[in-house]
Each structure stands twice: as C-alpha cells, then as structure tokens.
Length: 336
Ligand SMILES: [Zn+2]
Image 1 (spheres, rainbow, N blue to C red):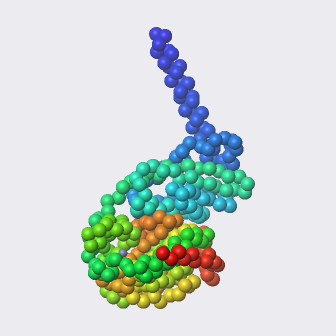
Image 2 (image 1 turned 30 degrees about the horizontal axis):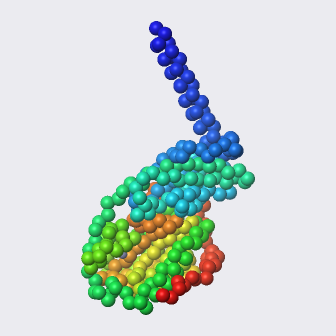
C-alpha cells in the first residue's frame, strides 16, 4: 500500500509544479514589464510556434494591448519590423511579415522578438518550422552569347548587382502597403518560382521569382502602394522596376518593354508602371515578378493569399509626399 501512496504524492507534486509553471508563464505574458529583469532569456520557442514552406510568407502576431515604441524581430539574421494592427474580434497587437527564403534549409529556427515600451524591453521567443518545398527543374537553352558573358559584361553585371544589393538593404520604416495585393499581370503564370535552372546543361541559380506569360506591351500594375526606388536597364533582368513598400518589403518587375514611372514616384496598388517585354535575358515576352521580404526571396503569389482580406489596417500611412530616402554612395567593385 505504501508504494501507491508515494506515487500519488509524487503526482500531486508534479501537478503542483505544472500549475506553478503555467501561472508564471501566464503572468509573464500578461505583464508587459519583465517580471525578473535579470533573469536569463526565456526558453526558446516558449511564446508560440509557426510553420511554413520555403518561399512562403508567415503572418506573425504579437499580442500587445498597449501601444509600444517598437516591436522588432530577428529570424535567421533578418530583421522583421512589426506594425500595429487592430482587427475586429481580435485582441490588439503587432503584426510582422516573415519571409522564408526559397533556399532556407529545412529545420526549426528561433524568431526572437523585442517589444520596446519606453525603457522596458520584453523578449519573446517563437519557433519557426521551415519545411522543404517541392520546386520544379527548369531546363533552358539559350544562344551561347547570351549565357557566357565577356569580360566587359561581367564587369557591368557586377556593378548592377552592387546597385541592387544596396537599394534592397534599406528598410524604410514607413509601411506603405495595405491589405489588398494586386496581381501585376493576369497572364499565364508558369509556376517556376524556386525552380532549379539548368542552362544549356549547366546548373545555375534557382529562379527567384515567378514568370507570367503575357503578350508584348500588356500593362504591368504595381502589386501595392509604394515608392519607385529604382528603375534599371540591366544585362539579365532587362528594363526593371524596384518598388519599396516599406518595412523591408520590395517588389520587382523585370524584362519590361517600357517603364512609365520614374525613380522616387509614389505609386498606388493597381497603377500601371510598365509594359510586358522581353528585354535582358528572356526567351519571349513575359513578366518576371519577384518579392524580397527583409532579404528573403519569397513566392510573390504568397502575397495574394495573405489573410488580410478583411483586415482594416489603421496603421497604414496616408501618403501625400514621398518619404525621404538618402541612398549611400554606390560601391563599385574593383576592376579585375
Ligand atoms: Zn523569371
């Protein structure tokens, strides 16, 4: 009889322990101020879990009743900037878009979030499960002179790469986009986002956007409100537009035959910004549509599925003028 009694006692203790732990967890999530300022960082993933496939976009919500000075996350060394969003029938909080890059290795990673409220900083930790996506294998045949670049073209390409990298490194703090995203061209999407490209028999970088086939000259619309950060005529992407939608979110439109906006222009969702073409390295008229979210290359079509359809977003900026932006001087790689 002694043994069962002992067991019962042990069970009671462990139940008590669990109740205590639950109470502490609940308390710490209820109070915006840290309960134990000098305590070691909380257990990884304690505040929740998200999961998604390579190339997907996750909507992360941090519940927070009060308006705080800043909510910022870090995921695989990328900054995730959160914005305040209030929706009917939901507790108030902050929302961040987390992009899973098409080449992030499958696994579990931490999304660490800092909630700054005056002098107080609250740390939150989420687990993000990255699952493998199934990407197609794309075999392309192009004329040799379009594939193998001469020395002059390589030098040009490097300068272009540096220019793009520099522009995309800027995370403007103003959120310009809103809940409804627009498909830039309603053509036939080829579904080749993330596909492995084998060019004339040699493997190349995976395809970092989606291609939409459409007749030459078809209107190309901005997927959301934003600022034209850069218009280019590049060796591979041809005539292209980089739109900055704020908080580290950029959309790109390549191989255009014509560009009808200029650097610094403010554009609205659905506004025509260019025409479908086949400039740069393209086999025929199509739009290459790409998205970068805090540096992660995500499937642009993931945006159209985001659960913002009915979400009123009072934090959306009402723009009357173009936000200030001073790019750092362009670094040109040394000549070889
Ligand atoms: Zn493409």
